[in-house]
Image (cartoon, rainbow over all chains, first blue to last red; front, side):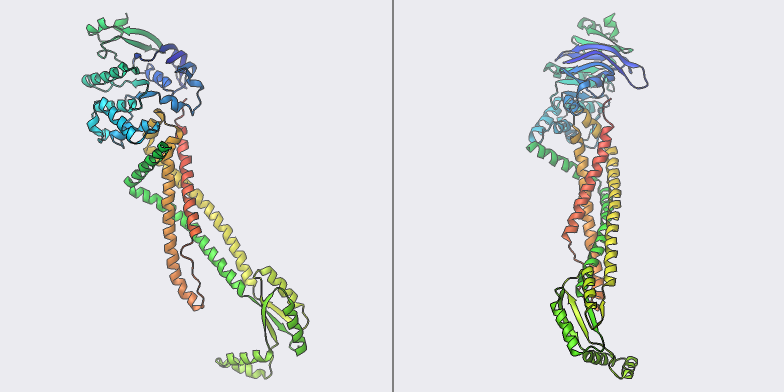
Length: 237
Length: 306
């Protein structure tokens, strides 16, 4: 589904953020992307979502080479993704319903069909009763759930979440994680960056850790979780 | 097809509701467009109506053909035959020296000094004269006709009073050139104004463009609401210009009717110049569209991936 082959990313005037990274994510996987802030988690997600291009190496999304895509084809590639940002990126001049319907309008879905799907998405994240509310009146957790509703409304096959729980307290974060797991269960590939992959998972999960531009991988294992550890690194040593 | 239509309706609704929420600024923008469209249209109306008026006057122009004072009846008959033969002449009439003399005496009776002067003349100094209406009102052909008539035997003087009409019409063609230049300049001003307005709107809707871009909107989708906004500004501005024009013409007609009455002329400016109004509205819409296209394309280009 997502294949990185010797990908290097350097921004003008900076060091290499990602060095020679290769990995492969299959459909239906749930992957955590960890690393301290500034390690390149967001950059990696941007490379997947084709908002950035690799400096060298190839990024294949569903067997399409992102670097070779025509600019006019990029929007159609992006529609395969549901993007969730740490800062939500909601539109504050429209209400919840209108925020969630935007991807459907972009996809050319309008009218009753669109309204039905928007309500289904809002229902999934528990915001059905807030469809007329303006995003600014929602709590941080609700805003993030609204952002998730917007990301999933067009039924993408891949969810990319950039620190979706970063600004939330533990109980909200658990809510959000439960939602992601629910989507993963029905076959959606989830790639989620976080600086703390713990307390989130009760299952086996793949963890990709970025440190100084290099990638190390490990599995988050259930037995260790029972011991309530406080950082990923403990599992890997 | 249905979806496509739906999308446009949705966009239009969105744009209209935004304009409704920002009534005052929308009104200001439309007012600027309206005034800017109004100015060249007024110039156009002025020149157009003046040239209609001069056409009208040129039709009335006649050539006066004064014969030699000593021309006898046969010679007069000869000139009359020549005139009847000439293809360029619509009609003509003869005023004999006796008729002219009588007219002069009658007319001068009201003025003491002139009638004194006339009576001191003693004998009739006036020549026989033909007054000729040409078929064409074109200044050049009138002059050619005048020259031909001048060369007829026993003609003392052929007089054509079109010199000032000619000057006026050349002034008018200069005026027309001036209008197109002013209209061109104002079109640039409008492009900048509308482009700038849309750019400001893009700043307030930067998030929308960014988010739409991130979740896979095509450029044309992102552009659409801004293009609609530009075209609508143009439409409303154009309509405003038309309203202003109607108001100005109405006020102008009221005062011109008094003057025209003095000259026993029923001249007035047509209130509904449909062609002009359509041209104003259509050009305002296209300028609005182009202005926002330029602005939004520049904004989208800044989101290109690197």
